[in-house]
Length: 143
Image (cartoon, rainbow, N blue to C red; front, top):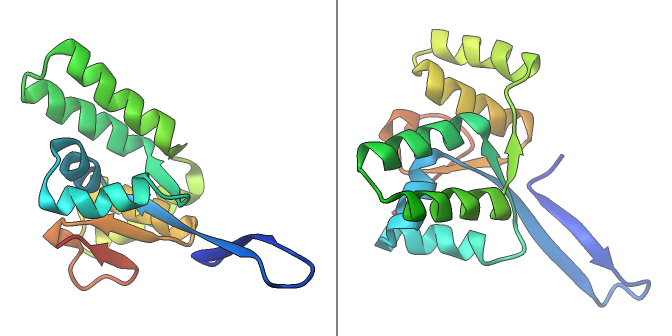
């Protein structure tokens, strides 16, 4: 599965709509929700026709972070609803888990390994600003 896919093409070949598939790390969602300069890059994906994948682990990390920041319940719900409405959640399955074990052995934390393995399994780049991913293939760094 390539990162760029043809969604629609007319018989004449003159009309082609291209969309991009990308996996978001928790870092990307945090920047987006906080409205930072890096979040503006994330917003371009969110507001486009791109297909955004979010590992379920990121949803847990994001909620935990927002709770630690003591965000009001209404704001917390709104943030999580935005993630749920704009992305496709990818659950941890055996293929991702086994790849994550290999990546952990190579030096990533288990959480980062699961997130990266999800991107690899879906043949997408991982959008992040997390420096733990420096040196790994298929990473699109923010900023």
